[in-house]
Length: 344
Image: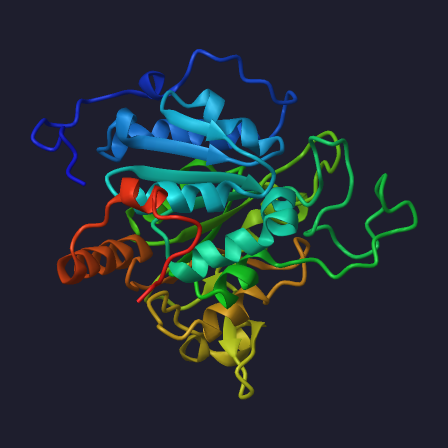
């Protein structure tokens, strides 16, 4: 479909233009405010139109997001935002389609929809707010809650091994996979910018603090006093090195796994050089498993950025080829054709 406004320059906008008139109703101090601010500040820089932008969400605290964006949007049903977004993105390729979801919404009831949107490589930008808890329903454990997590629904501690959202996305072979956190607006904006620029399915996990039901879940790595020694920045083409003085790094072991070492002990030449364009997702998967939880040095940034054929384009080409070969169909005839028909 051709956008009728293609010939008209995109107007200059400000954050105010992208902010709706709705009262933002999250708990005071919630990390969602920071994420919303980052997105609203980024949108004027992307050179896109408000009328061609859509935010879709499922159910949860994060799902209020579309109300606060002055764009088209829809608050859908629990876990189904990727499915609805798939329909929209494939039939309206002229639109920028964003999906805002949470760890419970996306990885529990919505898990199946998420992995298939990623493996199909639908042109979506998916932002997953991960606070390791169900916030809207008042503090039950979620698919990313740690083992032994005591909540209202696990009073004796959770027995379940948590999902690693990035490992899940990489296992589905998503083309773009990244992680950021709600305490660094600049990093969020740059990560979202790159996710939006990627053609196909983009997946961004955002460590987001729920200060009411899971306060401080990521404090050990995202707190200002901890970041230098606990966050591992991934920069394409550069050795993976971190620490206040760059004293730590990441190496690959003979068995293909990765581990954190002291640079002085191995030498800078031994450090793993990050390659986000590596076609095989295996190394990115290993990096996503480097930390056992947000209390150990944790990679952050873009894990994978590779180009694959986008699902919507392939679908459009297939329909065009079939139409050329067999002629256009008639929907009215189909409705009047009876209760059965022959395909082929």
